[in-house]
Amino acid sequence: MDDQVRRLVEKAWAKYQAAPPDQRLLIGIAGIPGSGKTTLSQAVSQGLNARAAQTNPLDPPPATFVPMDGFHLTRAALSAMPDPARAHARRGAAFTFDAPKFLALVQALRAAPRTQPILAPSFDHAVKDPREGDIALLPTHRVVILEGNYLALDRDVWRDAAALLDELWFVDVDFDVARRRLRERHVRAGIARDLQEGDRRATENDLVNGEEIVTHRLRVDEVVQSREDGSWAHE
Image (tube, rainbow, N blue to C red; front, side, top):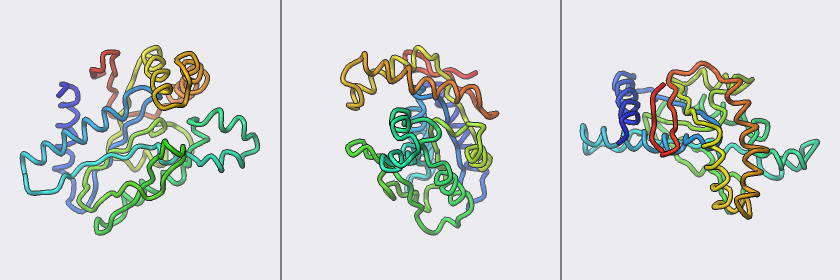
């Protein structure tokens, strides 16, 4: 395990151990597109579950993570906007997400007694739309890591959700590194036909969103640098 991931796991573990047993620990991981938010979220949740298994091997895993992708507005909702062509072209910008719905999920995780599962949407890349109720957050999930571009955005609704989190982390990355990752990702996902088209989408949409994310970032508890080689550094 990378040293910085280990440090974050230990920090989260200490907060989890100190939290009241009837409450969840909520951690938000934000960053620009291509920063490595999902990779870090997976690594920290896996690290926490491994730590828990060492301590209480018979207990269910306490940690899980929820990507923000499921809160994309549907293609039908984008088509119903005043400028549907722009809405579809800019899919991934903050205005193409259902921020109130995301806030409602965080509120439920924060307030609800841990007696029933809470369902969150996922994103179905085959149909390119959210899939409702696809992620089950169980009563045994006492640590929930939420990750997405706009979790640290200092805008209406997003800042309300951020205020409910116990920890807010930001994954920083060089824009050129993110650009290379994104153009390759778009080709793999079938969003772009080739690297040239993928690069155009990265520069005309993803990194435009990235500028807003960086410029209007809330104060965060941790800034983690995502390096080109996939390793992490603490800032």
